[in-house]
Image (cartoon, rainbow, N blue to C red; front, side, top):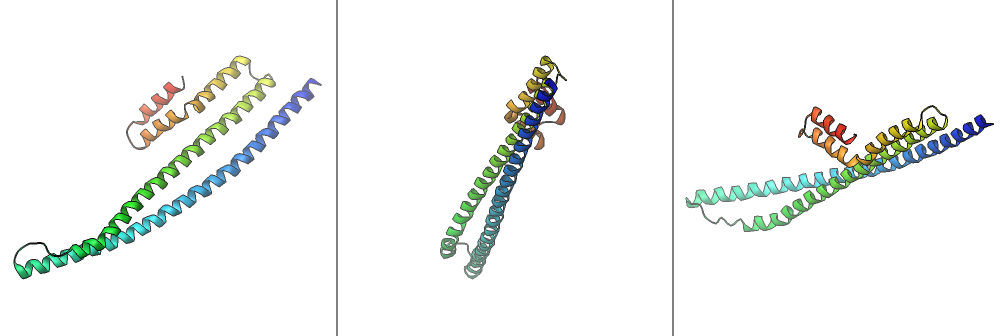
Length: 190
């Protein structure tokens, strides 16, 4: 009878785990779609920015052409009457700055969504590992001390997520070496 009860408990645990995994897959797909939409927005804004840069460059060429024409005619450099071109250029330069700010905001939003996804993944991994440990403990495969040690280790990974991510980003951009990265993460996990 005791064996039947343990099997029943394990069955319930597995059922909960499967349901949690299905929910997390659904959430990850929705988040991936959201990121794709944001990346499309960036592409559109980059395209608009490129068009404005082309128009701005054409205006600069007109300014240069007028400057050269007047300099040749008068044999001197002076105010060459490019104010009309500069006035036409002003809204384009302003829009270009707005687009650059918009792109930065969207990139920040994407970065924040990626952090949320990564943290969610760490939490899911923690829950799965915790359930495995609980199952092993209930089945008397591991002792209470082993259970607590292993749970403490996976808890540190979850609890130090932000710091571990920061260290990994430092390594990715070349601020620290692989050895430094490993040492710092090992320190956190003590």
